[in-house]
Image (cartoon, rainbow, N blue to C red; front, top):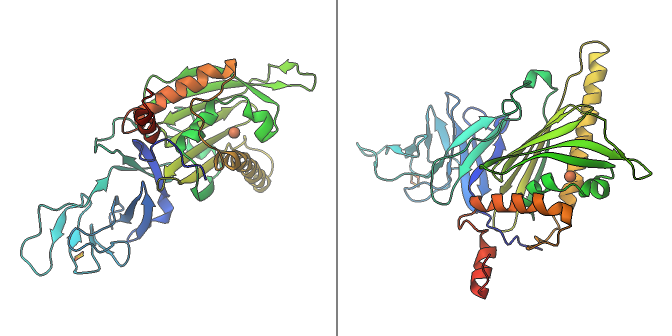
Length: 342
Ligand code: FES
Ligand SMILES: [Fe+2]
């Protein structure tokens, strides 16, 4: 096993569930960033994500906690907690406990996903989670077939591995066995939300590049946790990859695909079936990457070819801002002990 030498407690938005996994009145149990958490949905539909343990005597609210209107009732002694994590009722006392509070997380529901904001320093969100449609400001969910999903729990990989794939032009031929040669047109790592665009060229059997296919990919990385892509030209799809640390060595991987609807005409049932096949193919290609990532050891500093230097250096420099120490978590600690500077 290769424990990542990068902090597994980075700052940013991370997916913890899909919205349809948590209906009104549901209490959903999960573990992320080494912490037991729950998500519960009030009668009004409002979703709350909080730490799982009751501040009274520590019952786990995910095991028997019940939603009562807009609050969550503990199964142990009936204390009630609201969506800010405040105690609002002790059933056998006039006044609630105003001092104690269960830690809650900023949460957004977007593209059918539940994202929470994680920050070791407790800062409020300072950037927005990307939206696979709105962030590209062109087409909407109605222009696409329903979302297709992949969920792989507890893989030994770090979110940064997945983002580095976005600048990795050389892997297409070997991992995906496609003769795609991306030509990068944008590497913008100035802000916590970063942008990578490329156009697609193909390498023919004779090694000659075929350039004029008029297709490309635009990717938006919202921190380390969520990346959305838009493929345009020959291929019309959107994807979301969302990688969330579970503990010190594993992450949950979620990947979502939307296939573009073709203009009216033809048999709609057949068109939808074909979209299903396209979506499964995109997911299969992502699984080819997962196969590499889940056995990879983070290489730092890596041996890079000249053409790789700019992209990898930029993305790794950008990634540092999301780690609690601003350097890269435990790798930095190792450097410090050895007297290196990172
Ligand atoms: S432990 Fe939750 S009410 Fe007592
Ligand atoms: Fe890939």
